[in-house]
Image 1 (spheres, one colour):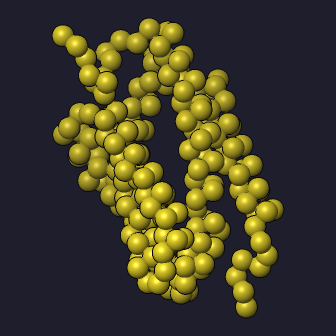
Image 2: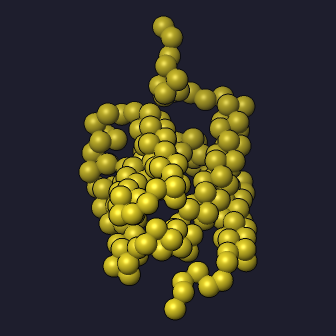
Length: 181
């Protein structure tokens, strides 16, 4: 019987596991870079460009933290569906699609652009919180066979370095001042 693309693989051989860990390093680097370039000061500057008030900037800052509350029901979802890979991939695709929608708001005008931008940020954060529950469990099984962790791999160092380089680039190349007095 043919196994689907998102179906779990019971026993990975060493080569498949190493390939998966290599892809994990690349994904972590790209994910860290994307987060650095689409959050924080960049997100706030873009919102200000769209006409956000101080209250809206505060709302944008709180959305990722409030979305983390969705992890609790997401645990039940992951346990009930038993499809960690599928949940992680689908939620990532939907969440990342919101980045494209957020970029499109630069070409719109008025309040619709700003509220669409905020709604897209809510969807991005919500799907990220739900997907992270499935992703963490899935990656734990990939990276910890028999107690072996990612400490010997530089996965998290690569992700942190990429995010740091992207953040520094944004901070050094952003027009000054970002917020006019």
